[in-house]
Image 1 (cartoon, rainbow, N blue to C red):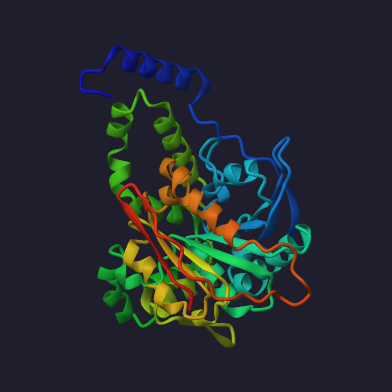
Image 2 (cartoon, rainbow, N blue to C red; image 1 turned 120 degrees about the vertical axis):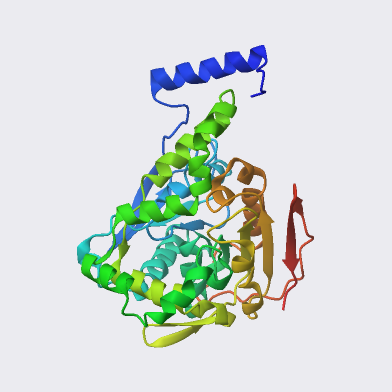
Length: 387
């Protein structure tokens, strides 16, 4: 709104206030209809029902949720939902989420997700879609799991991977970098280690607090933002949806959090390109499928340098493409600007690497040259050529 609102702004603001008071909000928070097609321990695989009158065509997309965050990240609200966007285009769309983590899951480590959860989900989706290759889209830690599985399992029917806001080099994360030297002094026996062992993980309230702290500036300025956008229905609806998302965080299993804490935060292990999982070392250079990497230009949790650090490590991929898009950690995935930036790039990427049903042996992939670069507003993009 202008400092001195125009008559139409006053009318719009009054309408928004009245609608909020009468109906409890402006956002259409109805979830996209879906069907559970497979489940297991902390594994739920859903197929989103096709849109009425829109036939499903092409390869399936599997959305990979990060631990502790709700799958609302992919289906935030109507008119600003990546799921809705894919389904209305006729794309076979699937989701992997994990349900509620409890104390009994405290012994599960990263191996559970890398060895069992994600590989099984990929197989199920491929079979459900008629044996086609699966395009993985992982956000945040979901992107890290996607990278590790693609590097470790050459036998899986993976057509391509897309990594959205996944920090590989934590020394380049301003929120973490200053405290890493102090964490290393504890040699694994500090307060944090004892706490997650006693609690069996990181409880939901602590996860909520951490996510809120990472976006403290936005939280503090939220009342002013509401007042200055009181006439903007879409803006206010987005704020409502993000608030709901942040109130639906879940817990981390104890052993998994311990591995993330010691290997990622303290050890910065993945920045070297390899990580020990179970009884083996997984090398990101073993990824042999096309890889699209997104970084948000205002992301404080996974800033651009921390995400871009993965690009030179993917030497085995036939094509690596790095895109900078508008938005913070969640906004780059499902913000209002994502409709014409991130989602458009994902559409083009999946179309480019769709191949149809796979034979019994995994289809080979040749080396493809660079795509032309694009620019989204003030956020640049680059494509790195095939190797």
